[in-house]
Every structure is written in C-alpha cells, then in structure tokens.
Length: 341
Image (cartoon, rainbow, N blue to C red; front, side, top):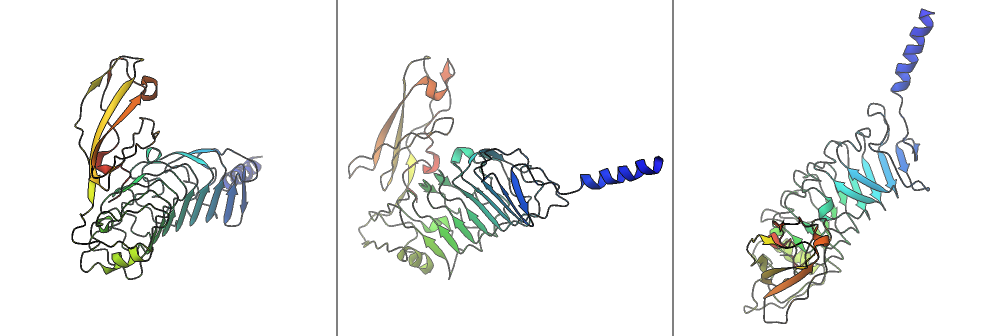
C-alpha cells in the first residue's frame, strides 16, 4: 500500500509541472492563440508553468478588458513575440514587460491605449527590437516612455493622436532604424527629439498624414552636420521655403499660474488657460479620468497667444463639495498643445 501511495505522489508531482494551456486558448507547439474564436474574456495572470512552457509566440485577439503588469505573463517567460489586438487595455503598469528577457517583438495594436492608461515607465527596460502601438489614443511621448529600451530598432506609433514629443525622447535608442509617425496630429518636427549624438545613415522617419506647418523653421532643421535629419524630412515630400525672415518654431508654454479654485457643488465651473507658441497652440483639456475634451480652435494670425475657456460641470470633474484643488489643463511642457516641437 505504501509503495502505491509513493508512486501516486510522484505522479501528482509530475503532473503539477506539466504545461497547461490557458482556458479559451489554443496551444500548438510554440504558438498560443487566445479568444479569437468567440471567447471574450481571459483570466489573469494567464495560466501555465514558466518552467515548462514552450510558447514563444502569444496572440491575444478580442480578449476583452486587460490590465498589464509584471504578473500577467509570468508563466510565459520564453516569449519572443507578444501580440495583443482588438482589446481594451485599462492600464499598463510600470515595467510591465521588463521580465520578458527573450521578447523580440511587442505589438499592442487597437487596444484603446491612452496617456491616462499607461504608466510613464510602462515600456522601461523593454528588451524587444520591434514595438508597435498602432491605432491607439496616445497624445504624448516623453523621455520616460522608452527608458532603458536601447534594443529598439523599429517603433510604430502610427494612427494615434500625437501632438507632443518631448526633447530627447529617442536619444537613447542607439539602434533605432525606423520611426513611423504616420497619421498623427503633429504640426512640426524637431531634431531635438533625437539629440545631437543621434547620427544615422540608414534612419527612416515616416511623417505622412500629419498636418505639418511651414510657418516657422523647425528646431534643429538647419543645423550643420545633421544632414540625416534634413534628409528624413525631405523623404516625406515636405518642402518648406524658409528665408532668413522666417521665425523659428517656439515650444508651447502655459501662461496660467497655479491657482486654488473653490466652487459650490452643482454650479458650473469655468477654467481658463493662456498658452504661447509658434505655430499657434490649440488648448486641450483632460478630465481626471483621462477623458479628453475637444480642442479649441486657435485665433486668427498674427496672434500667438489666446485664452481658452472650458465650462465643466461638477459631475464631470468629480468635485469635492468644498474645493477643487490642483486642477489645471494638462498643458505642462506643452503636452496638450496641438503642436509638437
């Protein structure tokens, strides 16, 4: 009897280490696909065993609502390709993919990803060579977005709502060969996005589908020794006939200082924001939940400063009955302007 119990115990231990295909998924060899054939939900973290998983490609298609963090794919450490599409990603936590040391390609297309749904360090430490964030709702990218992600060679940000790219956002990406910014809302291009040490002989910058302006000289466009940047602009059929009289583009800035605003519950509240810049900024307001209000049109030239007024109900702002504190339009460092410098 004791011998049989010992054998049974061994079988239980062995079975516990066998790879388990997650529910609503199809696992074939190194490929695992989930949800595409009717299932609209998936438990998190995904079931499996990190020691025995052979999955190198994981595709999540129409899997409902997800929150991504370091535990989501902890049972898929050998992943080389992760593709998530046609879903709603509520939030991407800090360093969500840092532990996937074998990852080569990360695709998050059509997943409703927005600035509010992404930690500033969401892609910090990413080991992948290819990153695709196509057809989402991103408005800004900053220096933090790609921190310690120096393996990136191809970044696709097409089909978003990008208005602002912070200086030196791509400066640390020494292997970057292609940046796709097609179909965004950029008005200018800047050498300072890349830094002065970013010298590429085979770099491709794709800017088609943006409303690029020629009313000012792009920052860094005329600097000697940065021919690659001028060539990248020219490859997009963008020709600006600048003269010595053409003013340089100016980074948008906020003319409104911090104020504490008190209001009464159920009364309409008006907030104002003054902004300067060239081309003319278009002020956009964000509610605490990340919802974006439509941009207000800029004034007619030659004015480069204007005042935007945004009436908002207390319900929309989720106000405390006594005071509204620290609510200003999300325009710090020009991040809500219809402008990128």
